[in-house]
Image (cartoon, rainbow, N blue to C red; front, side):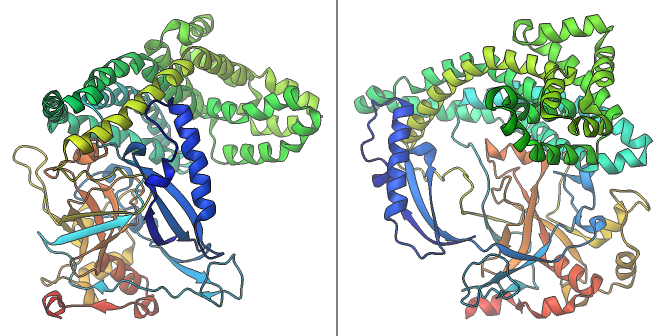
Length: 604
């Protein structure tokens, strides 16, 4: 997707909107305005229009874009290079991962977006990036641009405290148990390891991020900083009659609402983490719910029409499914759920079921023994029956009825309260954001990430996470060899890479000292969605690709601190080295513009 132009349409988006409106009515009016804005926007037939809110809905910007859908895979390194370090090194520095892939964009004969066709031709961009063979040295300027997902830098102390002290620990608690159980099976059986390695990595990714976020918020005194900031805000508000009238009660009301929503938010996270996201059989039951319920709601014909879609979901599920692993995870996670959620919100039902079965292991064994969902063979046999038989069997399946009982408790006791409190929080947060922009006029408040184009600047810099520990800002190929473990799925490397290292055959990609750079650190503020974002130097030349953050600085979604928050980039010279010297795809490098000599180019 390319952005052709950006326009501030705040005034048009807020036509007819008043502060006295209820939040739902306000949003309905804005949505109506946005439809009109899109209709009235001049664009070419191949262009698209989107309008996105900024600053919690206090500003709106329009983006006119064009999206090229014919993308063709060119190449990627073997996983032993592209995922070197795997889960152990995820969120960790020093990092030695050659994380990149390459695609070519194709267009129609007029260079416009087009669906795939053999007649399409390589796209010719208006601009392209030169690639620096000098790389980025310590202290040099770096800029990363891309489409990061979400940050929440302007939350209150109460919100950050709830995230770091209440919700993150709950999520970590559940995922920690799931990961330990899965790891036990993966170490015993290579087939299980292969089947579950992607799922394990997915669960571990957020688990490790939340752990780092919890530690970072405490170590770098995020709550104390928020408290001081809010004290200054309150002081300024109290000294201005207009501010006091409009904003005087904002923070107290937000504090109370976060206190009110906390037990429900905590129960929500335990429900989704223990009973849906990390629990395979219950997640499948949840995914099939609308299909199962459609028999009684929409009739046999509708149910039969959706069977192909459900069968496809089931095939994906069983592809890497090992019931013995899921059964053990089920027992462990339901025990955590029962211990941490109120009895009348679902935990009582789980405890009673476990007591009848002789414990959580027995509960899991009973459900997995009698559920048709657990077995590919049983499900395939069932799907050959008539729709009425399929619907009746699934509706009474023990795994499905177990999940449905928990979901009904969630929908009756937890979801309504979240729907009551969250809109009030959203309204006050929007007002608080507007207040900050008005009260702190001298500050330049950057907008939170919202999946739109975002530029973030910083510099190449190491960091010190703890006393007596100093991390340098670059890693090198010799570090890969120091971590190398033959046959290990995380730290093995191809023989050819070893041979290139031994002979120091780095071509034109070595640094000035003859070493092969692999990765480097920057102080750029990045988040999820920034993976693959280009890193540029002060000349606008490509020096790296962003792909991760350091564990100690994952709090940056809530509290960016340049003392500790670092983004991790693969050095573009390592990318070229792997493509050219390791992969032998010299023809690809010949398509690129390589430049050298920063100072000379700056004078021009």
